[in-house]
Image (cartoon, rainbow, N blue to C red; front, side, top):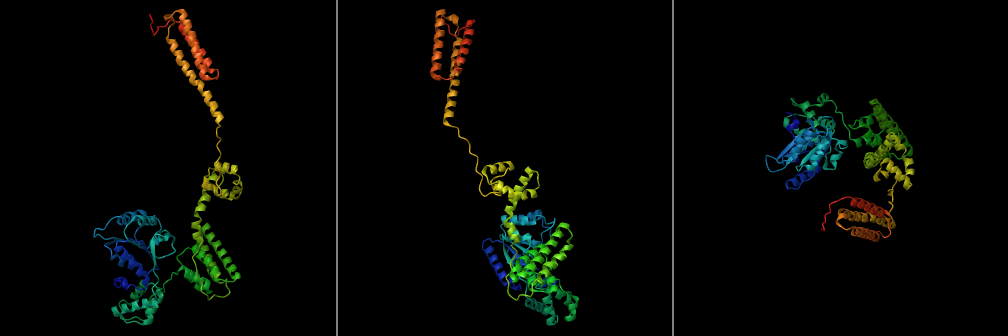
Length: 503
């Protein structure tokens, strides 16, 4: 049995170090027990500081727990089907809450873990069960979206004295005689990793009654992985090339390390000549870094590390013994703030490139000239219509909105004329109705004198009505009346059966 499992802490008070972090975790557990939901916990710390142990100790306070380790596949579908369904359902073993444990969330990468972070974000929004996540790298880009939604608790490395004290207790329980300097050497080599120190002790002491300094030859020294700020401090404080190269052994991309060094050079160096030399080294390091990405020949990285490490360190005349407060690079925060502007620029360039039959890069180069062309209102309106730009996209070239075109209002005199022109049509309809009535009357049913008298009377009545309604209007109604009367006369000459019989 491994000694790391045999001597694992059984309660929160047995955990070495990080007392403030443990107090925060106890308050978090108490709030859940009293029915007050809290944010998810994100434990961040180097390996061997007790992140997984703390998660298992917290699980004792809940009715059930579900865990996904780094060895499991953690894609979007797997996390949604396992953790997602568990976070939305109640436990079968009691009425309490279930604890969800996700280990090494900063290690989600590759095709097997595609969409894992997106699934975790969805679970945090929709789930109503407590959840604990663990991560090793606090600067990992994969957990940036999780930090704002979680209660971040940072675990520090365990102190060497605490590690040595625990190793002594283990040796006493196992009945092993030891030399104190051997245990202290194991504690220093572990670099704050308690699990590593216990494993090393088991390797040299298992099956023996005593351990000596000769037994240390069995174990090789551990390759230490430094913190980014410790590495930056070593570069800016030291002038020892070997020490600087060892300090740059980080699990971070060289571009990120370069940005951190670039940000903190003026915080440490005071002389202008030293700052100038240091930034010259940074410029050359960035040049080789760009070559590595463009040519896919990553052998250029060794020149990048030498220039941004040893080159920047040797730019100073003497080491400064002052205290300097280092800060994280503002480059990535500026990129995130300017993302909306860059998206707007690319969207406008794409539309203009389609109209001008050019690439987006060429269209962006023409932006200064378009800013001048967008100053006049009329020309700006025409350009916006041609390139199909909305108000938000026009702000790329001018601050003020483009005024809309004024619509011409129709004058009242024109409307009156139109109304008078439309009146004859109404009169003509009435004359047609009167003419139809006259068609139905047969001339054979009346004497000739009465016929002629009635026809004349009807013509007079129609002419008087049309003249009273037209008020001196157009002659179109008169032409229609003549045509209608002519038709009625031609039909009256023929023989028709009258609808009204007076005989």
